[in-house]
Length: 73
Length: 144
Image (cartoon, rainbow over all chains, first blue to last red; front, side, top):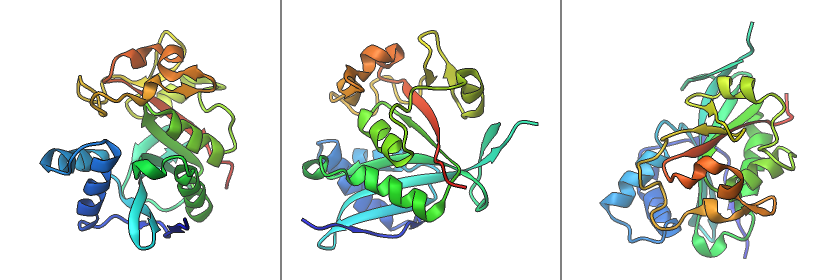
């Protein structure tokens, strides 16, 4: 099985539905409003998404939130 | 050092890994570690932060940052102070206490029961016996 790792990109609103369906599978549940909320919670504040596909199907993703790192003075 | 949430910062930066989801039948294919490794290579963050109960995420971050054990801290007090919402607890590990709802994030399945470094994670990190708690990690990526 071959995988395609997409370049990290900004999270878009329409990513949420696909991500919710995958999250439901990942948690072993039916995709429903509860899982949609789980996904929203999971991605809360995330600004970048990185997707992996197999034959164009979304099979995984990682979500990231940027932080500002300031060394202590 | 201090870590602050920001939406628009694209300089020398830290990144919170908010989560990895992989289709269950593909979870032994090391997709998580490759996702994290590719992200570090592409975006070159100085540091990766994550909150988790899942040993698979610890392994993915460790592999990508070339750290055998991401819970082996050099200066836990300073690290805990730098991670948002984190505290150093009596067992010597850094947590976000009460990160999730009382029943936890995962329902009846709890990945903290799985091994990390040969020991069930919730036996090494004792506050993980409470489903609402998460480990807080912050690992230098080795780039920049």
